[in-house]
Every structure is written in C-alpha cells, then in structure tokens.
Image 1 (cartoon, rainbow, N blue to C red):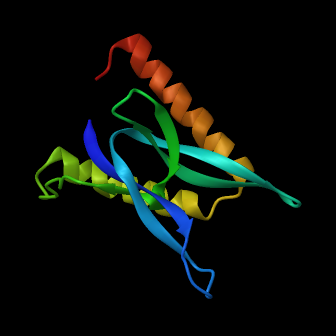
Image 2 (tube, rainbow, N blue to C red):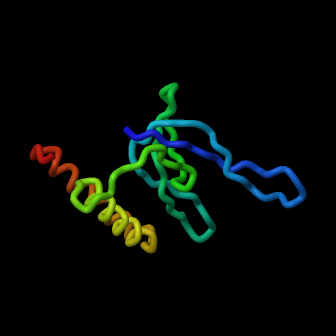
Image 3 (cartoon, rainbow, N blue to C red):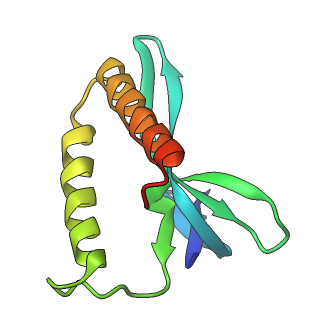
Length: 122
C-alpha cells in the first residue's frame, strides 16, 4: 500500500471567511472509490480515496484532499506507466458522465472482477 497525506478543509481566520486545506495526517491508501451528495436536482457523484489510518479506522476522503507521499516510476516500459495512462483515460471519460451512465460502468467493472475472481486470472 502507498502512503498518503490526508488533508481537510478548515475555515481560515480573518474577515475573508475563506477555507484552507490543512494536513490531517499520514494514512495508507487502499483504493479509489466514489461517493455522492444529494441536491435538489438529484445526486452529485464525486471520486474518493479509501484510506486506512494507523489506528485501523477506514475513511472515504475526497480525492482532492489526498497527496501521495511516494513517487511511482512512469517509464514507458513499466506496468505502472501502462496502468497510469489507462487510469487517466478512464478518469477523463468518467468525469463528464451523468450518474446513471456511471452505474453501467460500475456494473461492467464488477462483472469483469467477478470473472477474474472465478477464473483465477491475475
């Protein structure tokens, strides 16, 4: 697992009433996830990072509040590079999707993972 620095938004002191990102602490990154917030017009989906704190608590954190502490090699010959490029493409495509289309993507991913799990593909 990769180490991450998790931050949170806190009100900034002063007359501007602005918010600032304050570091909360180090945690272990498990995987990306998603969450939603209800609005009058329906739910709004957003990406999250699932992190584990040193005391064992697990938290679903908005991705903009997470910073990886280690660097990965993105050489063109590495598996990490192939994965990073594909994840970037997927992120760009999903960012503009309506929430009901995201359900189709999640179902397809679940079916693929189930297939891999039962066939032993690694």
